[in-house]
Length: 96
Image (tube, rainbow, N blue to C red):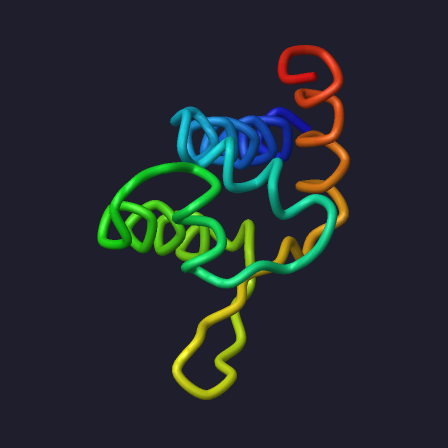
């Protein structure tokens, strides 16, 4: 029982660490409504494309978002309902 609780706590901690950055959290909020390209997100967050790509790569590495390529563009979306649920709550509490 304790081992399972420890595993789940570690999973939650890793999730919270992954979203504990203003640009990553902003990107997740922007992805709540629909998938967006890197260039769309970069413009909306007002950061350089290299910085946007770095933050998106971290979210992807953590399994919080998924990507698809269409021509030269890469589109990102939230794939996990747990991510959408928590980001929606954070958006309601802090960002609207």
